[in-house]
Image (cartoon, rainbow, N blue to C red; front, side, top):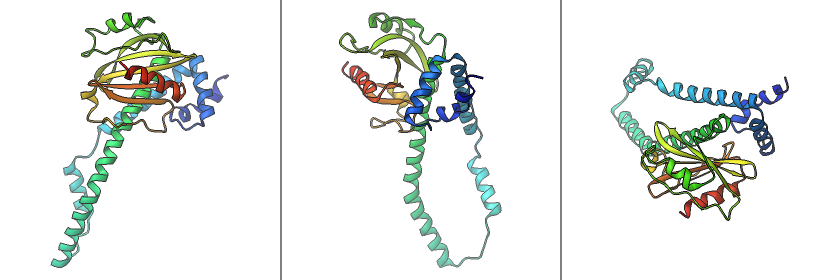
Length: 248
């Protein structure tokens, strides 16, 4: 019963619709409460399953065309009116197709960022968030050799406030990648690394994270790899860790 008031707002929290102060308070509670962490993980997985199911069954173009033909009225049109209608249709295509392509691209980008945020939450809620536990980059980096199809460098942290906690393999839409976890002032930050070629269909070099995420997130492309830095730390810490990776 202690957590009932928290769980009533759990969906609002996962959708990033709480105020900034409430998000910080909720983040702290979820990390310290096993019951709410498990509930957050279950609801996140359910949301992902619903999203996937919602896209699985879509009408074919032929079926859509038959339905439209069956309900569309068929008035008699003059020759001139037919040409005017055709011209208007061409104008709509010229204006609408770029807008449609833009919306599709935006949807694909938002899907990727949501998946990254879900991976971050899922990992934090796990009892074993990392497969290789070490603060030494010379131990963590070699662990990934032979497990993922690319190599990457880890930054030196001696003069920074960040601490490496370890790493594990992860997948984004069946693409294998590296997941590293860092700590800064009791905040956990995830760094995800994937091959850029696998992300290119949904992200470009200028892609930026959407504003309505429950976490701060920064992404960029470098050396054939796509990096994502995400966490509940402030934006300055996210940027500082990103700059350490960019300097490699």
